[in-house]
Image (cartoon, rainbow, N blue to C red; front, top):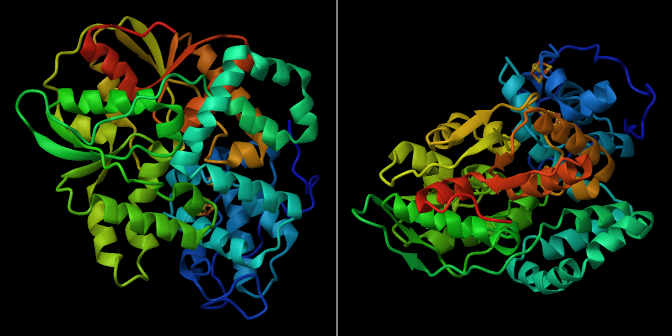
Length: 457
Ligand code: SF4
Ligand code: SF4
């Protein structure tokens, strides 16, 4: 088991005070300034009941109060009441995966998602990170939100994979010794196939039932082009015109989840501009982390008079691909696919968007598919955006735990709906020594609609 830097037992077992915050806003000299500090009223909603604790992956790993949702909210309260932002506070907030399992579990409706996003933006503005941490974060944000730069990386990565050099490098452990974070980044890269560019307009098959826009995404577009191609084919087969704007960039999810508020707002504005005027009924997303952020654009751009209303209109039209297909109902014929399938809930689909039943209904409607539930399905796999790069040790532990639970289902195929989860679970499954095929939900649907069955890999 990994240990948190503050262990053992440097924090109180449970906050002694009740939920009420003694001030309306941040006290000068305390952890927060007055640009969207953690909302005191939301902090006060926490009654410290502890129902969220067993669902929190960091609390499950370390058993430390300050690494639980309740503890992190308590630190926000201390910060609001005048406690300066300390390294220890930041470590506990940084250790949060942002999985939102606590939001699902909380009977008092505490909006931890809003609180941690407000807190992270304050941390990024007001906390001096170490030089190595700054450099790593700069590297990540110079690459991941940039589809073109990611596509440029494909060539060298494919060459490494084709020659087997990636495996040999991994087996030496050299990269791990130089930087566990860089080793984690390298180890997550999925096997790269050919690019599958999509035309800007894909007409519906048969009677047209609507028009949707497709977000192609950054990591999804560069590393999983087959998922975007399958999404387009499935939407088309179900009677939807698909619009794929060429100029689309990042949705800003990684930036928003990591406190880079202005950067996230810039990405959001650009995406609103991109889809405005395309006449689409919905903007369809096949990456859970992107979808959850895009549904929150109204809050992200609430202070911008030029965009607030447009962001609300945009957010109202965002749908996960499983929501659109489930709501529309099938017209395309489902051909049998004989497979025992374990469905893994991506946290940003289940906890953040409440989308659990739709993908299961879609999968169960495929003749021949037997769906198996995974134990501890609410517990994060450790991917969490870039968490598995920034915090490789706990992420690996959570990944291995998830892999054990997946393998225990006896399924021969793992299906999920997020590129981050696909990469994280794939590397954990590989470590487990129980090889298993992994697919996105729409890839399995596409295999059924095409009648070709599962692709050979
Ligand atoms: S379940 Fe909700 S109210 Fe209870 S401790 Fe957790 S966040 Fe606070
Ligand atoms: S978001 Fe996840 S990791 Fe963070 S406090 Fe909530 S349950 Fe724990």
